[in-house]
Amino acid sequence: MDEPLIPAPLVFRDDGTPYSPRHDDIYHSAAGALAQARHVFLDGNGLPARWRVKRRFIVLETGFGMGINFLATWAAWRDDPHCTSALEFVSIEKHPFSADDLRAAHAAIIDDTAVAPLADALASAWPPLEAGVHRLAFVPGAVTLTLAFGAADDLLPRLADHGLTADAIYLDGFAPARNPDMWTPAIFASLARIAKDDATFATYTSSGHVKRALIDNGFDYRKVAGFGGKRAMLVGKRAHSRSVIDS
Image (cartoon, rainbow, N blue to C red; front, top):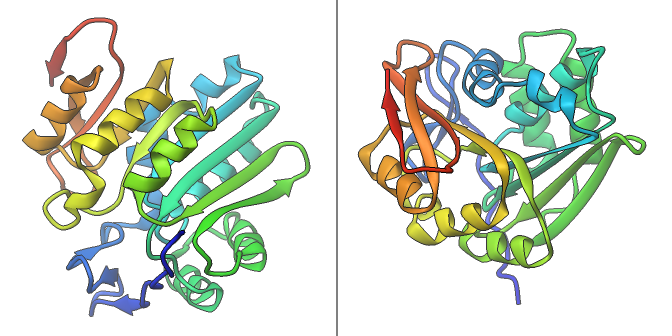
């Protein structure tokens, strides 16, 4: 039986950046939430170009947070005249916000008026804070969001058992040192099961622990420039050979 959820509290640092007391870490760089999502996760996974060659494109995210990565991805899909016919976004979150806190967070951090209506639609459709899988449809037959509320080490194997596959993986969920439960060998083993043969991934971190876990579970990585003053981040793909490129 799924354990009761403990919602995330909405807390801001003095500079206005959303902060998690539980993990003693920020939800995004002070340089901007949407800008970070676009640099790290969209650019890091070669989007939107990669989804143009597929009828259906599936994104898996570890750590929904405030939904900024989803909103940035949805906005890019909406604005792409050559987009795939269906975008499916699957995300795991152990400590989701309430709908009211989600609205308050978006009001404080979303600086793009074109994204604001999408944020409103997300908050309006927000499911009850109950453990398990919640499926939301935004553009009928085209944009869906599957929210899996609970622990990633429990939910990812269940999603894999039910046939989930991913074209792109957003490795999020706070820094490995702050939230080690999201970066365990079991998590990476589940991601290897879910990743399609041509799947890509991107993550804000460049820690040695994550590099080793990626290689051990069949992913190639390369270091690229990070966001907001961060020196490096990791991007990569499902490996066909055990190669590593640092740049």
